[in-house]
Amino acid sequence: MDSSFEALVSLPRIGDEAPHFKAVTTQGPINFPQDYRGNWVILFSHPADFTPVCTSEFMTFASREPEFNALNCKLVGLSIDGLYSHIAWLRTIKEKIEFKGMKNVEVNFPLIEDITMEVAKKYGMIQPGESSTKAVRAVFFVDPKGIIRALIYYPLSMGRNFNELKRALIAMQTADAFDVATPADWQPGDDVIVPPAGSCGLAKERMQCEDEELTCADWFFCTKKLSKEHIAEACEKEITI
Ligand code: BEZ
Image (cartoon, rainbow, N blue to C red; front, side, top):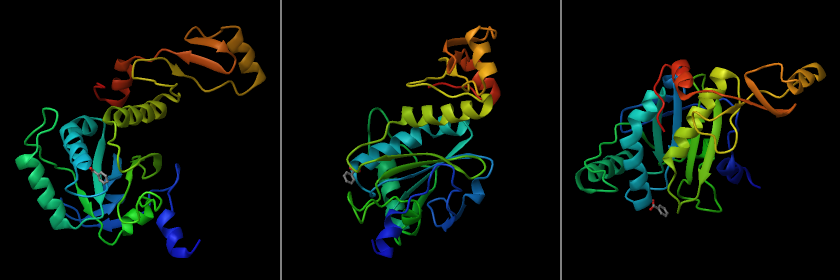
């Protein structure tokens, strides 16, 4: 693999510090992730301006931005297009496009211009097998300390599921606040998983049902109730999904 190809496929991992960059956006210059310390960020890429799937996604993200902001999460978009293309596209969306009852939608979160692909390369948003000129639909969840906590990738042809993005954000915030994990298909209000017993003594206690809060199917698989209200209280936010 030559070094230029390697740069195209470099991919930050979960637990890494979010790669730093300065960029021009539709909301002015940003210094990432420093400008966002103390907030969660969803940094996402889309293939190109003036394309239909991307348009449907931007309308959805912009319409739901208050829900993400209420969870202390800011949105930042990116594509390998220039600033004037971004501005023209966002104006067209507001003036002309209707989708699923959304219309007159104003995109108020920053959209990065990345003609040089500097940011897209740092974040592995170019996947040459899919396209070497367009970013795929990457989603990076960056926590308030600037650490990458999750990444989800979609191909060019598939619009993202915004309920899932919100669910993932709440699940990570819940795991942090309560030192729990979330099982398959978890939704806020469902039972959560407590850390597995790490000693023979604790395994025995778990099997003897000594903790009334826990329901244990076996020593390594215990759940407990955690209400939506309790989660919302911890996050000082109302959780609706
Ligand atoms: C779209 O957003 O519609 C799109 C972009 C690139 C390839 C295919 C679809």
